[in-house]
Image (tube, rainbow, N blue to C red; front, side):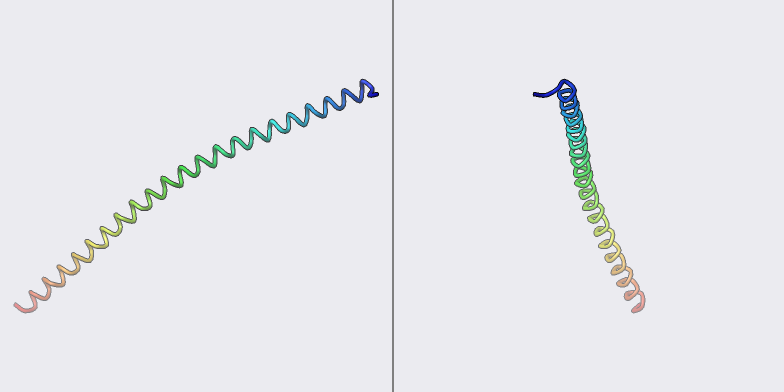
Length: 80
């Protein structure tokens, strides 16, 4: 048979454990939310990077085209 003091201690210990579990569950939910936000931002950044890489490739191609055109003009001018 349990004494009232022992029962109180057991109940108090159970309540403490439940409070700890509730805090951990809340923390886990917050971390999951942060993880989802970070994954969404990462996806957006990947799209931005792809767009910027495409723009960079376009600029590189234009530079090559311009260099070729300047070279062609230079060659034409040299023959004149």
